[in-house]
Length: 105
Image (cartoon, rainbow, N blue to C red):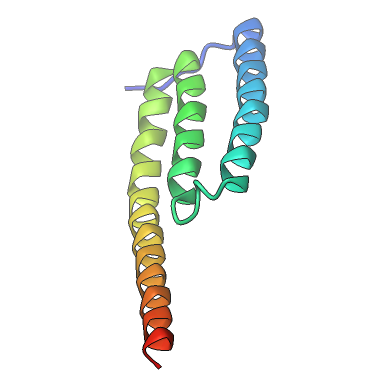
């Protein structure tokens, strides 16, 4: 099966403009979440959501290309997401342990 992207420049321009506007809005949302500390330890999930939106834009142009890219991102991104969250949880537990040790002294 050959994966084709139709070269409809109007659709491509609309998709890219839509993704640009999403990126601007999403950046503002992430900045707001970061200021309140809601993203701590889970930034990899925020990145994954941004990638998913990009893939949604690609799907408008070619569902086959989007599915192929989705599979590739899942293969590389899933270990990173799990590792990132695991490292954060371990660091948080270590910080709690250090605080408890200081209180006991």
